[in-house]
Every structure is written in C-alpha cells, then in structure tokens.
Image (cartoon, helix red, strand yellow):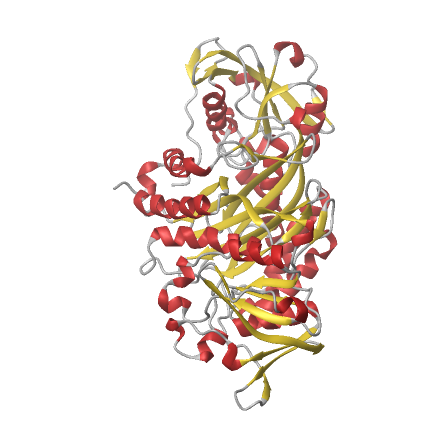
Length: 305
Length: 305
C-alpha cells in the first residue's frame, strides 16, 4: 500500500476526490472539488463561493521566523485570494486553531490580531470557529464569498487563442517574507472582471509552472509562455525562481485576443503582465526561450509530500 | 504572560473573540461568534448557517484505537450536529486534512470513506478542501447549512419557566466509542422545531454540566436539573459520568411550560427526556438531589488546555 509520500499530492487528491465522487454534487451545488472555491446557488444573480485552506507550523511557516500577526494574516489572506481568483468578494470566515498547551496568550492574540486586520482590510466578518489543543500550531480558515453569476471565473475556461496574464512579480516569496505578508488581489480581480470577459482565472500558490499545468489540465488547452516576459520579483533573483517558487498569491488569467488589448498594464500599483497564450487543444505547458526555441515547462516546485 | 494552559479555553476564547470584535458583525452577518454556528442572511425566508470543527489525533481521537472511517465520520458528524442544534439542515462542507508523510493511502481512503458515508446519510455535499503535510493527523471541517427563519434556535433564548430536555442517553461516549460513531440529531431537531417553539437549543459537546453553564450564560437564566431525571447511558456507569463526560453530541433544549407537554417522549428510536427547568434570572446551574436538596452543579469535564 503506497504511503502519501510515495503517491504525491495530486495523485492523492485525485484518489480522495474519487472517494467523495458520490456526494460532491448535491442540493444547490453548482461546481464541486477542483477549483479555487466551490460554487453554490445563492440568492438571485449572486452565487456563493466556499473554500478552505490549512496552514501548519513547520510546513507553511516557521513560528521562529514569521511573527504571529503575519501567520494570522496569511491564514485568512490565502482564503481571500481563493475568492478573488473566482471573481468574487469575501463575505465571512470561520477560523479553526490548533495550538500546543504551552503557547502564550500573547502569541495567540497577535495571531488573531493578524486575522482581524486582514478581515477589516477586506471587509469580511470572522464569525466563529474552534480552538483546540494540537502538537503544533495549525490554522485552518474556511471562507464564504459572493460572486455575480456573470463574473464567475473558473480555471477551466481558457480557450485556444486566449492571451495569458499575471498580476504582480513572481518568485522569492519565502525569502522576502511575501509568502505571509502578501496582499490578496481582490481589487485587481474585480477591476478585471468588470472590464473584460475573463475566460479563466486562478491564484498562484504552487508556483507558476505548476499552476499553469493546473489551468492547462482544467481547460484542456496547451499553454505557452515566453520566458523573458515573466515578471521576476527582486527577491526571486532569477527567472527560474519566478517560474518555480510557490506562494506568490498573484492571479493567473486568460482573456480573448480581442480583450487582451483592454487589459491595463497596471491596476493601482499592481503591474499586470502578458506572459503568453493558449496555443492549441491538449494538455501541456511550454516555454519559449529568447532564441525562439520551444520546450516543455516542467515544474520543480514545492511538494507537500 | 499567561500560557494557554493557564488561561483555560473559555477565557482564551473570550479574549480572542474580543480581539475579533471589530469585525464579527459585517455585511449579511446576523449572529457572530458564540453559538453552535454563525448565521448569515440567505435567500428569502432561508438563513445560512456556517460553522467549523477541528479534530486532532491524540486529542479528539487516537489513531491506534479509532478506525480511520470513524475518524472521518466524526469529523463531519460533529459539524452536522452543530447545524442540527441551530434548527437547520446541512448543505455542504469543505474538508481540510493534515497528514504525516508516512500515512498510508489506505488510511486516508478509509477516512474519506467515513466522511463520504456521513455526507450521504445526511444528504450534504463535500465540495472541496485542502490536503497538507502535518506532524499528526488533523481534520478540520467547515460546514454550511440552511435554516428557516422561524426554526432558528440559539442557545440564548431560554426563558424563566422553560422546561429543559435532552435527547438520547448521556455519558461514557469515549469508553463506548460513541464519541466517534454517534448519529447527529438532525431528524430529531427538525421534528422538534416543526412541532413546538424551541426557545433555546445546543448540542452537548463538553459534557452536560459544562454545556448547561453555556446555555445559562447565553440566556441569563438559572438552570436547575433533577439528578435522578438525567438519562444515563449504559457505558457511563454512573450519573456523575452522565453529567460530566463530553462528546455526547445529543441535543439540550428549552421550551415553554405549555409546549413541554407537546414534546414527545421519543422521536423515532431516540428518547427525549425532561431533565429540569429555567427557574430564575441570573447565571447559575443547580442540581436537585433525590432528597430535594439543591446544590450548584460544577463541571469537571474535559479541558482542552
């Protein structure tokens, strides 16, 4: 019997999803497992978005190096980012917190302070949750959001001919601390869905290369990026890190060739960069080098198992 | 600076709730932290319920003694129980799962199998979540439910003169394995809210004595139970265990004196027992012994920290 380590995360999730297959499309559920958030019927033209994200000390952050308030910020912001990537706005969250008994109340107050600050910034309510004992700090946030039916953006909607864009600059987020202090792209996503018809959108969490594969698999289109076009964050140091590092929490999105001209070069202070296109039907991700040579883009990003 | 252990859970949660005070009543939120679930505006006469519950290996179960499928069942059923206690019906859940890398795929499939079984039994959808690495198995489930406005039952609605009831038989749930294999009281709660006006309701998770204090604090009424009236589970062995043991996942509820006569003695195969009344304004829980003597009922139940 293979262990989780041997299976790898994608295979594991596929397997578990199959196990849940019988129940994932029920009363009021429009879209189940497999996107940034699940979609439920809401009231009128509003749909409900529902997602969760767990972060664990020693895996997603280190208590020794990340201040408690930024752990709290990250726990909620990662969920807000999921809602943003669906074209929605956050509404409310519940927080489950596991902590070792020796944790100081100060640490927890700072952590909740970070959650509260993020909630205030994005005008959502933190309305409940659970606090339990655990061997290490673990924070799980579940979030509800709303999205107008016509604004809903899945990762499965990219079409051949679409242009690909990313917000922000990529890579080095662990080194720079941005993996915890990032600003979820709610405003930017809202500006986009109002301005153009976004065919597909997702947030970057596993690294651009890996997330491009996710969009390719979901949309059944071959995605090709130009290496030199990818916006590299200062802390990344190299294009390789911009392609492979995880936890950017930027947006990756696809719009028609026609709409591409109407995507602004920046939204507020956030740059928006065209990095490539969907070039054919199929499942693959390719990179075009400065010499025009085209090669597959194989992820080497962070693996959970 | 006090540690979590020194503060105790109630004081800790009070403190964290204060920290979140600024944000807990926002757009669409009707009731925030402090009940079994939060309440959000839904569509028409429907309200949305939103709750989460985290369970950790070594705290809420032991992997060595509880089969994986029952761990999964418990993780979801505890949330279904929260929705039932608000007078609602479960709609959808997201599951966050933390597992050590050496966990076998078989263990996880069994765990998800338990979740799927519970989802099917209560006709809700499991529509997403997150699977991450963690030092020990931790399962966090967030749940959405719906409730008709007129069926909504909070723990804060008990009034002087109300009669108190519990479903099922209490105590010994850890010993008997019922703490994992329990049946959430959705059907029973629905039968009750349709039949009578339930003033206050909650599920029993910390032990009857402790949970009575919660209802007393929330409703600002003194609750008095007759010791001899409390239904004792076979595995409990003694009335003391029935009062103090946690994780019964039965319902505790209050109805007017008049409605009390209309509460059935059983719903399906589940006994419903009158155990006492709300006797005065104030915050206290009292027990009346077989000799008629009245003493305070002080919880000695499980503490998380």
